[in-house]
Image (cartoon, each protein chain N blue to C red):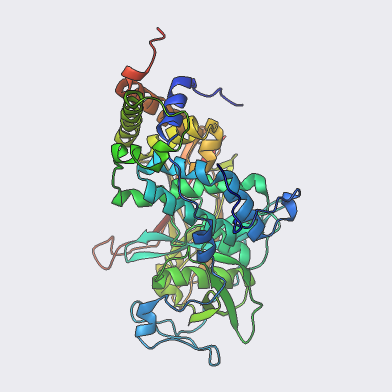
Length: 193
Length: 312
């Protein structure tokens, strides 16, 4: 049973005209829309949840400071993504690879109402762990390109802009990264040949 | 022309999405809000404060930082005409590059639409240089989007938490030189963290701070036809600025420019046209240097700057 809390957090005001957002409104709106997916992007690149959260926080703080110059909500998400990836790069020097098995027993794993049976959960945890580990084995740039391409769904041209590298370099990283991941994760891929 | 993207593997997309599908980050909006600098925080720049060199708002003075070249100095000449451009304004920003005497500042012009004097230069420090040999010491979001009007020779710059905790002397000079170039005024810069004044910094001497040779034109990666327009500033022996064009590591042409002066305490403009009509289309590198009559046997060796360009 749900009980209606009397001290609910203040609702986020939905504004219809993003162009008129001030920095505080922009922060609220963009946080509501993108916080989770940006942290997840950070986890793919850094392999560490705490670090990804910290970096994503940094990105939102930077966005707030920059809002009057940026102003355009369409530019905000690319800016946030770019900041998360760029900051992940400097953070990687102190990387701690996340322990996915420990995470799988955390609150996230028990939050789903349709949680599969424990065997299935263990298999899923193992698969996630293997995918993250395979990503961490890639050179930095390849990992960034793979996360932006296959998680964030960016085109090669958008990735080139975000990372400040040439389109050709993106292509090269994308094809090498994909080849390495396929080789490392054959167990989870259907043979299409 | 757009080449099609490399094949997109939907199975990899599924695996990557699944890999983080159970990541549910805590709600941290309150933490983010708490980090937004509205209130003054005086915790920055502990080293400077410890040195007792803090300038207070009532008596804004130039301060000498504990390390590096003295900041109390004569005002360098920053007013130089930016290179010509189209509809946009060429905004100058000072970036960090390697030289024989350690890291120094290089000026780079970038085209900016709707440029705001002073602020646009700071935005470039955050977004970074186009020349891959340069770097910026100021990450994205370092500066608040405001800048005071110059008053009594001082301009106030406001840092956010994204700025380095304790900026190096060279990082401070990046800002001082960039703001002066943007405003075309020989101001000092008062740095604020939130609303707290942390330090007021004057420009350090040019010859101790800048690369002694610095290209303005061409821009990095610029496409040219039969003629390559070159301009820049230098302080070089006998005002001589040797140049060469390389394809890969092979020099294909060379000569020298003559700067408008030498000696003194500043850099002097030089410019010229190089006839490249005899060179095949392709990618080249222009390298300019300071003149080193000792051939490297004395002193630190020649300063240099380079740009890649494309002959169409």
